[in-house]
Image 1: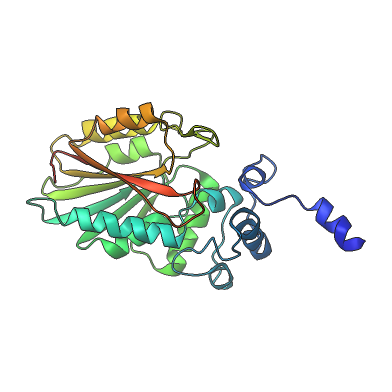
Image 2: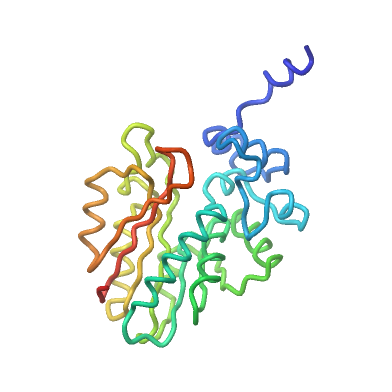
Length: 262
């Protein structure tokens, strides 16, 4: 009887619960991280980050906020993204090295894996939110990632970024999805916060003479008009889906170039 009562009082640890106003800024206990993995994905180790399973990263002092756990790109996906970005970066003509930029750092796990895969690179990330910045700054220090994490928004951060024109600018674009993801129509890239196209336009206007490699995180189903609009901004593009989750729940990547073609 007591077990049934306890279960009734414990809400299902899914995206909606962890992003609720009462929960989203909480630092999760290990049992909550594992519960989220089990309840949402059938895997207690689903939120593996920085090359570590939850039990391992928690033991090292790494922590995640509830909203960061939901929004982070876990190891298996982040590494695949890093591999595809690295393969495309090698095709860029006449570059001396690469600069990897994450305008919305969050947990920093994606730039962690991109930095492991892209050779000859400098890493720069921006995070405006006070709580997310402090937690991620500490986490990245624990894992020893050599990346410049700035407590700043993407607009001011990109405007202040100085990059030689012979260096490839690799930008991972994954703003908060908020309510942009619908179970019916999929991901609407026009409803992310901010809209993805606005970020791409800002990158293009800020670095008009650079060769830019865009890597936009997408979903298995994307609202067609929002994807077409984004692709029209690129000189070359390719959309990939990573079949590592249940059908209909897989993430993907839009690879695009500005200032060069493959």
